[in-house]
Image 1 (cartoon, helix red, strand yellow):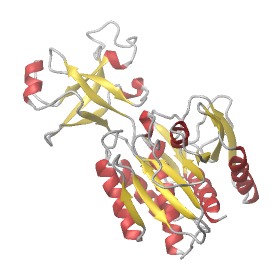
Image 2 (image 1 turned 135 degrees about the vertical axis):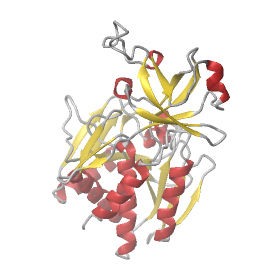
Image 3 (image 1 turned 120 degrees about the vertical axis):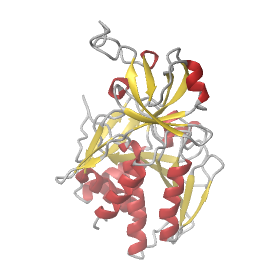
Length: 342
């Protein structure tokens, strides 16, 4: 099996370039649908906005896989007296990493404004605490690239509370295989799944079971896969693998998660994935993520009777400036394909 790496990179850079914080995902889902339509797979959108793809197999058994296309972000909370904007988070971005980032603000009337995310003490020549002020959402604001001097001026631009603020992903793929970008969680996994679908189609492979693929749109806020559009016996979430203290995973491995904040994943299915990785000589790690939840977690909390498991490429610095490597992508892609074809 050979990863269609050029396709994967093209897809990844294209979808990362489309702003899609939770609640604002229609444009990126439209792009995903165009990929799936081009491959000829049957698909539909749920009322929630998730994209569901059906891959017909040789048996009546139904299995599911998912990755989430929604990302972290911000929304306008209110107006400050000087015309800047106070903020509210979407998901859990690491706020200190956003200090000084350029952003776009999307209004409900279709206008797009640019600006900068700053702390409330942004100038070292003016504020004694410019270095020490805690970078948390209550101490930060957006300064628009518009001539506004008051809250009234900003309101005249048509900006409302709840308007989405999206920051630059700053995506780079280096010649030696490093993938640096915001939102690799989880658009990297989306690109991996699309590359697996491309591989099945290009090689005329019919999987042994029907596969329900869900590209979910609200994982970062906790309820991405609370509804399953198909009756499935087991579900595999493809999401980033964590890297850090007391963890085995690296930027070159496929992560197999044994337990996260929602509890242990299915013992038999997780063991099956470990054995597939071992037999294929993949570089893999088995870890526990106590501050993590997945689409499978949401499905289980909603009461779905499924076996659930979680794999994904190792990603460093999650919810900040993230990094992975093509070796992790290849290992995750191979394990996913092996699972689909077992």
